[in-house]
Amino acid sequence: MGIGFKGQKTLLRELIKYMVTLCISLVVLALLYLFINTIAMNTGFSHPANYNEREAEKLAPKLENTAKVTADMIPDTMSYAILDKETKQKTAGTIKEKDLQLVKKKIEKKPYVNYKQKGYLVIDRNEEYCILQYSLRADFSSPLLRKYLPNYELTSICILIVLLIVVISIITTYFANRLRKHFETLNVITRYIKEQNLQFTPEFTHIKEFDDVIDSLIEMRDALRSSLEAQWRLEKNKKEQIGALAHDIKIPITIIKGNAELLSLSIQSEEQAEYTKYILGAGNQIEQYISQLIHLSRTEDSLTIHLKKAFVDKLTETLQKDIS
Image (spheres, one colour):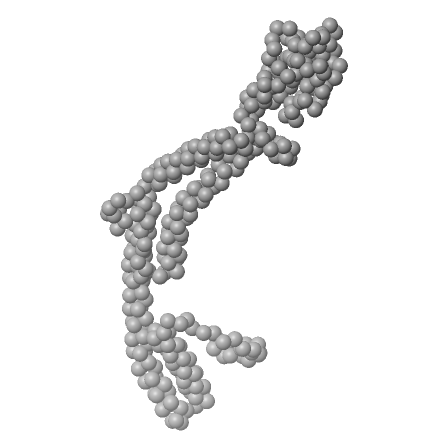
């Protein structure tokens, strides 16, 4: 039986194995994600979150000392605005007015202002302030990728989520297919039992819960086989007894028919001849029934009935004679 197999596993053990495999795969994927990000930063494929802030600090001395700040001095990763010192109104630049509200409040206290992952650097010039706006997110170094893709952080997170789904799907499908094979083994056994094919050799799964079910199915198979064998023996004995009895009945019927035929050859009245005819007819019917019984006792087939058209008046006449 399956219970006695060495190294037998359980469904709990398989579940733990699935969880451990899944966790290890996710950790490896996370480490791979960090490694690729590090390589992307080191090779210049992407810029870290503070890259634009450092670039703004490098650009600040130039903008502070130049005679006039123009748009061509500002990198495409930044926006700028020129504010009048007295009125704090924007006189030039690409920063939206709503983004400047917070900067205007803190312009004299802090040279750096951060808000909603955007950074602002205030450069104090002679009669004006130059404000640089830049992103505080990691981003692609390529202008083309920045144009057609979301920022680097969002893109990499989306890729990570897709990879997580793929890894989880692959591992789950692998373990699900293993369990499906075991369920298919149970289906095969139950199909054999349903078809009364009871000579099969079961294949155990080496998983305790499945093998326990297989053991139960084997016990049911053996019980069913014993029951069917007993039923077959009973049916065989019944048919042998019916066959023997039919043969025994044929002897007295033959004697009755023989005597009736002898009586039919003797001188009889019309009424006696009619009775003798009834005896011979009934004897022929009994012989037909006995032949059918002998046929049924010798074959596994059931009695075949052949239907044919008949006249009701002839049937009624025959019934009237038998009744009378």
